[in-house]
Each structure stands twice: as structure tokens, then as C-alpha cells.
Length: 226
Image (cartoon, rainbow, N blue to C red; front, side, top):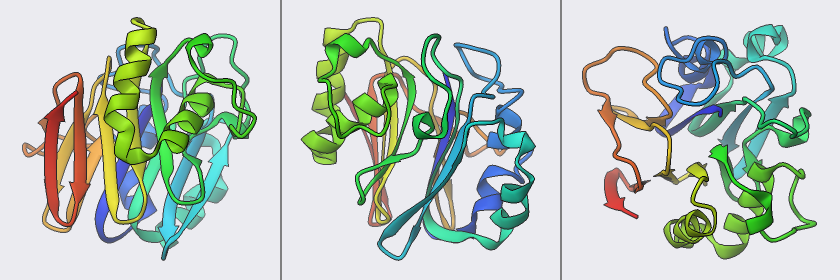
């Protein structure tokens, strides 16, 4: 369910991360290489980036490959922190813009790759949508991203079938979890990419083990078990 990507480093164009790589999110929207659940991600997309300290978003409910307006503007959008996703909707969940990641609390941008039983999540009127990912995002925002690991472990214990890969950025920090789906990381000279799957065949991509937390901050990367 879904593919996502995060960037933290020097300012680069959104297009260079999302549209231009040979197996980037654009290609993953119709032909992902490592997706375990589902075959396409055509139920919406979202790109979030930081304009100074302010998170900005561009989201759509249609497939990414069909949005020519985004394709024409993405090369002109540059940021030091990007969170982007393409969506494969859980059966029964609505397909609209509000359901597309990244979600935000005004400080963080957050994407959820997976599925969780909504009955184990608090009903939250502040969530952007009724979909499971939005409710999970609201819970994480309320608990605080410093508690991301414990929150994911708690939700995972309440729903043993949940898949809880989270990716979140706040402009100067990038956090990600692996819980039931794939995640890879690429350390580049100009920054760090964390993504559901590699966007090219560069040999420096590292696979992150399941049930781990990735923290990118101040030029360092730490990977710890959950």
C-alpha cells in the first residue's frame, strides 16, 4: 500500500527526486519493483516540501502520471526537505485529496505506507480525513514525533496485522519506521534519501531491516531497533 520518499540535505528540485529517477515515485505509481501489497499506486499522490520553516503541499486524487501541471512546475520547486508519496488506497477507503499523504500538523509532513485497523486508533476530529493513515498521523502528531517509536510499537501490538511504515520530516530532521514493508536509504554527498524502494540501481542503497527506526539529523544517521 503506497510508496513514499523523503529527502534531507542541500536544496534540490522536487523533480529530481520524484519524476526524473529511472525508478522514482512516478514509475512506482504504475510499476513498483518491491511493493509487497498491491501492484499499482494510482489512487492519488502528494508532495510536501519546506519553504523556510513552512511546510507546503501539492496533492491530487488522480494518478501522478496524469498530472501535467505538477510535471511542468516540479523542476522549479527546490527544498532542503521533501516528503512525497503515491497512494494505493485500502479497500473501502475514500479516494480524494484529503486522503493523500503527506499529512501535516503545521510543523511536520508525514506519510504512512501500510494499513491499520481504525478501531485501534482514537477517533480524532482533528484528522485531515477518515482514512486509517490520517487517523494514525493525527495520533502521532498528538503524541509527538519524539515518541514515534513507542507509538508505532503500541499500535502494532494493538493490531498485529498492521503495516506501519512511517516517513516524516520537519525541515531539519527526517524520521522513518519499518514495520511490515520495505525501506531503503541512500547517503549522497549532498544529503540522505529514505524511500520505500530505491529510485535507481546505485550500489550505495542500503536496505533497512524490519521493525527499525531511522533518524536523520544534523548530518548523522542512526538506525535503531523498535
